[in-house]
Length: 212
Image (cartoon, rainbow, N blue to C red; front, side):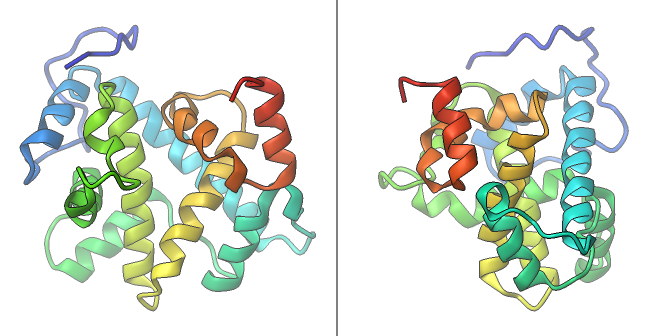
């Protein structure tokens, strides 16, 4: 399997707070093992994840009108989730720990997302990307976003629509936030699903990638 060059000093010791336990599925564990070689790069992605959550909260909690031309799914999420802030990554892990009565980390969110979708893999559905992508950061970033959405749905009313709305809203804000490692990971799916995005983002995607 290909290893991306993250231009980060090699470190065989994971950064505290990263994948402290093994996952249940060897095909995903293999990607985790590769990512752990570059712990600083993964830590940067977690920071970028929280930065997007913070920007989403600014919009959700602001009395100013949110533009549907850019953020139609942020509006939908605000309506579904209510006028309250989304928890930061560390906060949602703490909430899940209390709910599950056992320690929950970022690996749990990834494992949980993969557990949900594994039966769809190989059937030509939307989830085949999980095993097809060779970049381990890309696969785990995608699963992290899906896993956060699952946890959010689980913790708040069990509404399954919250997960999908969160994922789309997150991608909208991630796109408009500018270049980042996390955007680089998610970009192939944003390009592939460009017709599902609000009109202004669609235009920006097609302007930047005219041969889609």
